[in-house]
Length: 103
Image 1: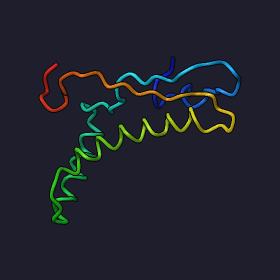
Image 2 (image 1 turned 60 degrees about the horizontal axis):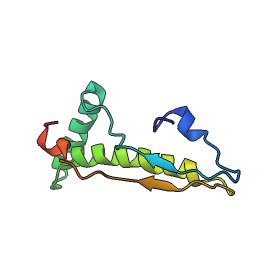
Image 3 (image 1 turned 45 degrees about the vertical axis):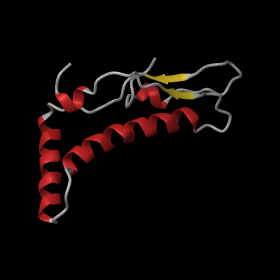
Image 4 (image 1 turned 180 degrees about the horizontal axis):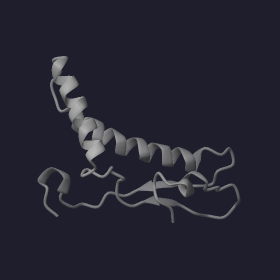
């Protein structure tokens, strides 16, 4: 088991003939209560509004940070030439708490 974004997830090596799968449980969204992230999202949103663009650029950046971590982890699992890993992502049918703000 490894955490997305941690050094361990970058060092996994699947080059032998053992059967295995990589299962990602949940999505690695950044800590939304981080003051540094909140300032960054505000800056991007304000910059986008100044340029006359529609939509919430801060929200888009927040989601892109998550998907970048997912893509980097999958790339680390599958990048070796002899890799024998199968990435599998399962999304459970549940309410989306990010939109409602409720658990």
